[in-house]
Image (tube, rainbow, N blue to C red; front, top):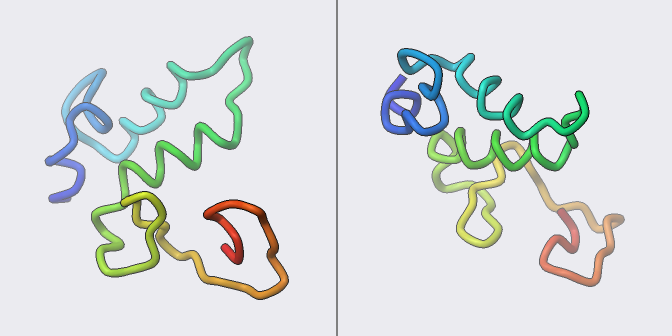
Length: 81
């Protein structure tokens, strides 16, 4: 509840702060009736990041329930994630 109340820009753009407010934010980013998975992940990480304090982060954004795995190889900061 504290996280929802602290981010009215993500949880209350259409009415009072509520978890479902994230839908409103995501729906506004849809193009042609499609919502890219990257938008969903970005909004969820930004909105819910504070509840994952102390966990893995990337660029200052907490990654939530994300862990490193040696089989995931990338040539960027997401290597192993």
